[in-house]
Image (cartoon, rainbow, N blue to C red; front, side):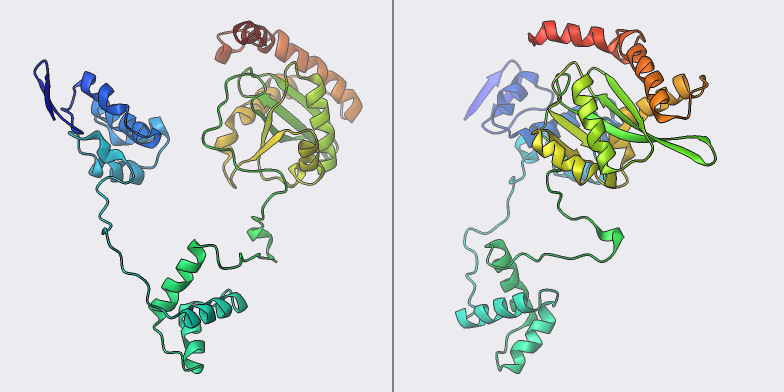
Length: 342
C-alpha cells in the first residue's frame, strides 16, 4: 500500500523520518517496550549526545547503542524484540532416544552441580555413547519444559545470603507512585553523640508528599523495626500501601511478618544500591543538619523521642519544602486529597 501525506511518502509498515503525523499513526502498533526505545532515539536526535541520553533515561550505554545499531529510521518497528527474527521456519527435531533423555534427567537430578562433561562420562560407563553437546542441549530442554527439579541451595557463607524473602520482593517495573502512601521508604541512621553512645534512628519518608516519621531506639532489630512500623502507621495521615527498605537484617523477621499481617507490600532494594533509596537518605541528612547538629539533645531515648516528635511536627507542618513548591507536606497532602477526592 502506498500513500501520500503532504510531501511525505508512506509505505505500509514504513515511515519517513521526522514525519510526526506518520510516526503517531505507526506508533499505535508498537509494544510498550518499543515505544520506550523510540523515545530514546527521539531524545538522541534532539541532543546528539548518547551519554546524555543514557543518563536521562537511566539506561546503560551498552543497551542504548545496541538498539541504536538496530534502529532503522524508515521503520520504527525495528525497535521491536522480534523484528528481523532469523529463526528458521523449520527447526531440527531432537533425535536423542527417550531412554537416554531419561537417564540424563536422572543423573542431573542426582548430581545437580555436575556439568555436561561429567554426565557424559557417566553415560559412557553405562555404554551410552552421546556427545557433551547432546547432554547440554537435553538439559536445557528439560529446564525449559520444567521437567528438572529446582535446586534449593543452603548457603554457608554470609556473602551469599540472597535467599528468597518470605514477603519482600523487588519493586515491579510497572509499579506506579502517584498518591501519598503509595510507597514509603524506610531507613536507619546512626546517631553517635559520644564515642561510647549509639542510638539508632528509624526514618520513613513518603515519596510523594515528603511526609517524614522519625523515632529513636537503643538498637536496630526486627523487633524495634516492627514497633516503628506500627508507630508509622498510626502517625501517618494517609494509608500506607507499600514500604521500601534495603536488605538490612532489621527489616526481616518480625518486621517482614508484620508487613504481611497488615497486607502492606514490602519492596527490597538490590544490594549496594543506596542511590535507589535517595529520598530517605536525603531525609536523614536533613534531620542531621537541622536537628542534631544545632541542638543539645538528650541522650535518654524517651526524652529524645519527645523532642524528635516536636521536630517531626515542625518538619511536616511548618517547614516549606522546595521539592513541593514551598508547601509543607501537610499542605501538599490536603491539596492532593482535593485533587484525587481522597
